[in-house]
Image 1 (spheres, rainbow over the protein chains, first blue to last red):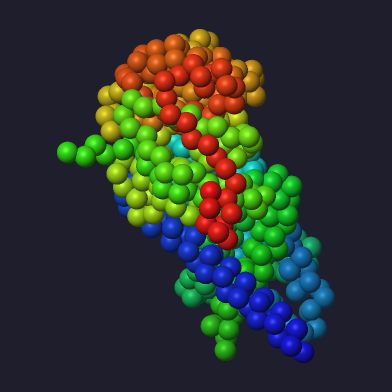
Image 2: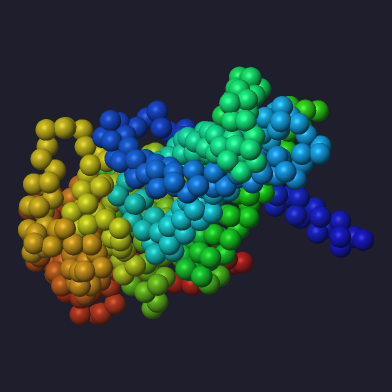
Length: 262
Length: 225
């Protein structure tokens, strides 16, 4: 029993320490941003656009495709599998509640974690293990500024934009598939969607995307920067970053649900 | 009037990553001075250089750069401090995803205050000093080890380093500290630059009119070097 309490206490301290580190990282990264000169911003801006292109633009088609599939599954299930439980009117409401508020932002975050979060952690891990971070430091550049700011801002903005596209494609795609496969009236379903969607849904979508974006980028940056000098730590850190990012996003999803519905 | 040392350290103790503590008695580096670091284990000597610029945390003692205690520096001051110090050792690397030109320009561009400066021309001229002008668009992977170290040396010089911390510069770059590197530095407007050199051969050490520091294991329990 004593051993268990000791172990629990130890793990609690580790968890609190990790949480504080996660909170400190964006503060340390963005805290000194106001002191940057135009020359420093112009360098950081270049890295930001590269990150935005990789995380946002290159993932656009993938996210749209996933949105279409998601909307299709939802429409077919809603129209056929659940037809005995829900009416067409309820299908529109369900699509708004489930897709806009819950699944689309979460699925977008998961796509970004798997696609960009892993890449960022591996890249920073290798840079750390191969001494490139030290090189940047010896140039007189804070790696948190040069590598952290563009990735933090780029990934967060990408998650917001991709979530909006994902949601739009899922709703429209779902409506079209329900019309094409299930014979549902497209006009009435789209009308139902437009009537049901409110400003709150859009705010929830944006808020969740923003929080997911910041959280997953902070977690991936943290594990990437803390790889150390052993190259064998890179896969370990990447694995930890992906699992922790997903856990953090799920936590925030539950947090938002509690905030909205309880 | 007291002359402020560029670098001064008292009873510095640091870890060699394998749990063995090493220490150095008090030393200071002044303008135009040269110090030789002698260690049985070169890995320890490199860690010593890295500890001096706060890439590794020391276990004890004090380090003062340009008259200021390094403990009082925040992250931005520390970045600015590192910019004034050139560090080259066996594990120094260029950024692998940037060309040679981009590697050299990054640090300079980050601190550029005058937009009218022709940075491209400046970097090309600097690379010409080490015969790498033709390879400025190569990524580091396409350069030989000697070319990479020469590029690293130039990178440390063009940022305007006021002190150099070098491990075996002659063996790494093919440039002699006494003949070639001062010429390179003067070509970039740096004169009489002080340095701390990690050396292994007695010949090099005996050939100089400098002071030496010896890295030795430390017995922390009895606080003895």
